[in-house]
Amino acid sequence: MGRTPWSAAAIFTLICTGAVAQSENEPGHGYTFSAFNVGGFSDVTAAAADTGRKAVSVNALSVFVTGHVAPAFNPFIEAELTGLDVVQSGGIGGSHNGSLVLDRLYDDAILSDNLTLRVGKMLAPVGEWNEIHAAPLVLTATRPAVTYQNFSPYLTGFSMLFSNTRGDLPDLQFYWQPHGVFLQRPSSPFALDTYRTVEGLHLKFPVSLLDQVGVSFQQTTDLRGTVQSLGGLDFQLNFGRVGLQGEATYSRLSGETQGLARRQEWGGYLAVSYALTDKFTAYTWYEEFSGRYDPSAARDLLWGVSFRPDPAIVFKLEYLQNIGGRPVNPTGVLASWSVLF
Image (cartoon, rainbow, N blue to C red; front, side, top):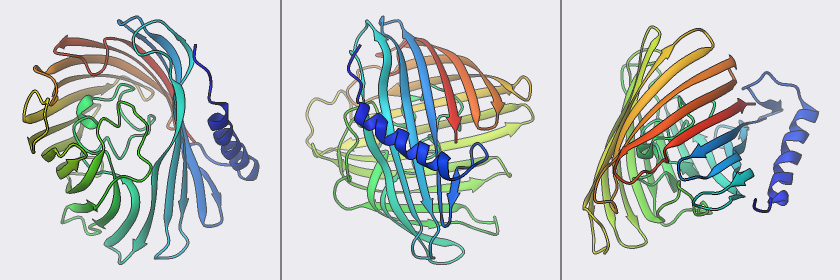
C-alpha cells in the first residue's frame, strides 16, 4: 500500500467541514452563503481487474464554488482530490497516492439574456460526458475512452456561449486557447497529451425537455507538433423506461510527429439503459476505440446495475469485458458509491 497524501486530504476535509458548519443543505444543492454556493461530489470505488490489481480508492472528492456577484463577475472554481488508494494490492500500475488538482477556474460575464463570455480554465465541450463528468450524474462508473482520450478535455482561454431562450435555435459554444493549459493535470488517463493551442465549437440541438443531440468540432496542436482536427456527435434520448445515449468522434492528424501507428483516430460508444424501478436501473454499453498509437481498435462490452436511494446518491456495480485490441479500460469488476452534496 502506498503512502497517503494527508495534506491534500486535509484541505478537502477543512473545506467540507467548514461548509457544513455554516449552512444546512438539501443533498445535491450545495451550501449557500450570500452570493456564493459551495457544493461538490464524492466517488469511492472498489475495483478488481483481471491484471490482478485490486483497490479501494477515493476516485474523486470534488468541491465546487459558484458565485453570482454581478453581471460581469460570476466565478466558478472546481478543485478535486483524485486517485487516492485507500487499500491496494498486486497488479500492474502500482499504488496511487492521490493528487490535488484544479479542474476549473473561470469567470462568466453575462452580456445579455443569450450571451455569456467565459474566461479562464474550463472543460472543453466535446460531447456531453466531459462537461457533465460528476460521478453521480453520469450513467456508468467506467468512463468510455471516447469521452476523454482523443481530444483536449481542458482549455485555458476564452469561450462565448449562446443559449437560445426561445428554444427554436441550437445552443452554441465557441472556444479558443491561445497558448497552454493553466495548471496542467498530473499524469493520468485524463491527461495523455499537453495541448499548446485549442479551438472549437459545440452545437446542442434540443429534441425535448430531456433529449438532445450535439455536434462538436475541435482543432488542437500539441507540444510534439501534432495537429488534430476532430468532428464528433453525441446524443441522449429517452423512450419511457428506455434510455439511449452515445458519443462518436473522428480525427485526422497532421504534422511531423513520429511514432504514430495511424493518421486517423476514431471511437464511439452506444449505451442502453432500462429503469427496472424508480430506484434500480440496468444498463449496458459497447465501445470501439482506435487510438493513434495502437495498430488495432479496442472493443469493450459493459454490463451494470445502479441503485439510487436518493436523487443525489447512487451505487453502481458493473463488469467490463475486453473483446479485442489493446484495452483502455481493463477487464474486471468495478463498484462505486457516489454522493452529490
